Length: 499
Image 1 (cartoon, rainbow, N blue to C red):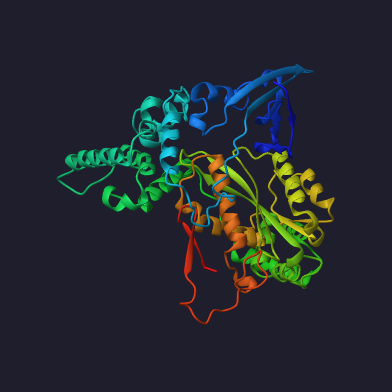
Image 2: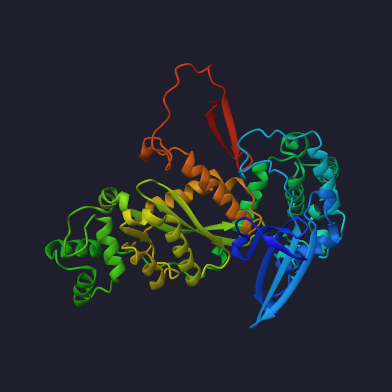
């Protein structure tokens, strides 16, 4: 099949594919998609997904572009695949992934969507979301019950094609069984009961929770938080107490030596104490001096850390790692940046295995995204995590940005980042069950869009980071209709007046 390209090329997910529109010799509109991979990795969903979907679904009655031809080639240890498909010229229902306005859809749109979903759900598949080995290990450990087979352990797999009424019936039946076992006393839910309620929660419309579920959404989230707390509780492993506190006499002696010798630092004061027969660590000396408000040598005066950050706010950017516990008790990490001057939030990336190389790559991506705004930044504030290597600092040093490391175990020295991480938890993450790494990235990106474009900040006179001024005050509140936009499924609401 011959044809000629037309239009601009587009890169697919993560830049792994390249697509471009074109026309055949007969004038038919087509779409050419190309991908490449090492020869030993030329398989899987990215490589065979379009071909498998064509065999399973065809064109879904005109709702999916039909696959017309496939051409494979290899060379120098690399495999190449070109796929030619129909080009659907139907208009999109929204140009923005966040639906901000009411959509005007034709009457047949929803029935057509329902029919297409039924066809997609019809073919059988051997794919599972959780491996049997993980279920055999995790379920007895955290729930105290025998591990069921993967095909039976999660009720959601059985209910993908069922309507909400079927899920409600299962919830009511299971609740009835629980009540029969405990008629003599108050209702107490066992770990297996909680697993059922949590698994069925996604199949019940939110407006029906009060009539169907015996517990609230907050209770389900509290159950998950309790599981996460048990997962990371190592208190039973502590076999010995900590070191004894420093005596008052030693503290007074440290303060005296520092006052009488202002040019001596922590190490020098520690050495003088050793000469007097007192074995005290340098970190203990630093802690005593810090609590007493004594600055570092050789200058025990000058601006405080807060005064320095306030004066340099427009030129400071800070970073820190945020951990997120998933619904299956796995943990993923996000690298967060915040500009002190504008309070603008940047989510650099999300991964389950943060390494030094991954951290360096996120720093390079951030430098590209910031562009010319990097010229106004002078300092990067970070902690002493080993994932921040010399290569990480070199990315910012090449732009003229100096790296400032906080003291060990001093999160308040990076207060802006710690505060925005706490805000992320209180306003979004504590109210959602995060399924996987991609879900975590989606939630963080949506919240960052809300944080930068709408959320007011006291330090900026109630202005969002991207806003320059507040709208003019309205004297007649009845002249305009107040609109509400739901963010993250209603966890956060945004308000504005209709034009």
